[in-house]
Image (cartoon, rainbow, N blue to C red):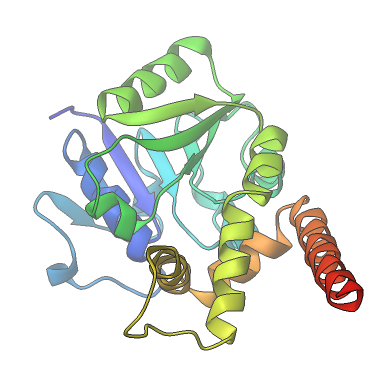
Length: 250
């Protein structure tokens, strides 16, 4: 195990999985504003307080997107310039701007989005993607972390925050949006389900297993999801128009 100390601020469903992943190679410290019981953490993971979580070589924020700016504001007195700071938010443009604004000048900042949740990580042996953006980091440090994630059998994708948000608005954003619409329809299994319908139910179950807050944050903090929803609505209207036109012609 490396002698480096890596901290995880936030210990929800994803924070716990992320801490376990990092603990395979580092001494990991965890903190949650709600508090953490000793039986919640795995072997070798240290529970600490809000001040202690910033005494580390690298720190990953694993908090809700809508909470992230406030966490940065309130934690300013604990920041250490030598720490490498990461976020793990599912959107990138807003969190990157917040980190630039509230972290000390000259801080090393790497924005990440592990493109998986606790359910998908634990249920697959395939390489899962992680997006990494070099916000303000020297080439050596950045390359070291890219190599680390690559060795963890993750599919590393390097891109800008803007490109990430444009892509995920029409992938992750639309998946969660459709999943919630399907749930609102109160769909359920039947005795004659086709394979396609079963896959639809899988999408609904997977997306709705995440919190409602995550759904709201994905839609509200990605600059491009509004366009996605507008495009989706226009497509539904065109299909409905084509069906109505066909009915009238017959």
